[in-house]
Image (tube, rainbow, N blue to C red):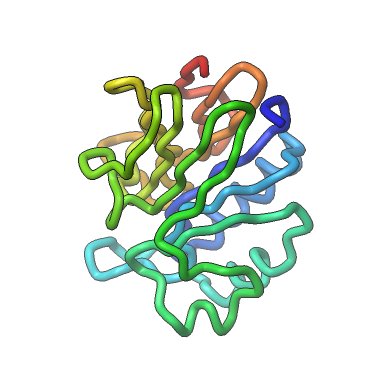
Length: 183
């Protein structure tokens, strides 16, 4: 159902403060579903170590979530991550129906805004990976990225996304609207 709220988070990278932003966002928005775009536990060789790096605490938070969760594998996920997380994190993509549209969710390193799967006009491509929030429509397809809750890039704030009846909104860690697109 399109009017249900879905919270979108990406690129936690083992940062406790990023996981805490997620918890706060769940309490503020009360979504019916959480979409996680990968890179949950490990910070990766290209990123600086997050100041609050605590992957064991992030595991505890993620495994304790009560909201249903759909996740995809990020480029920093490994088989050992699946051993400690109690939800699937090994798929390169997932497809979520939303009203009369499909949301194709992928981390962004296999499929990405420049390498889209086959989609129909009005469908949504949802990815993370770049740590840069995006809300745009290109060639009939919505390209959406919530940014990163822990390691934002290009002077963007820590951020997450929310699908609701108005469209898709990127929020800052203080739960202030940062960018929006009507869907």
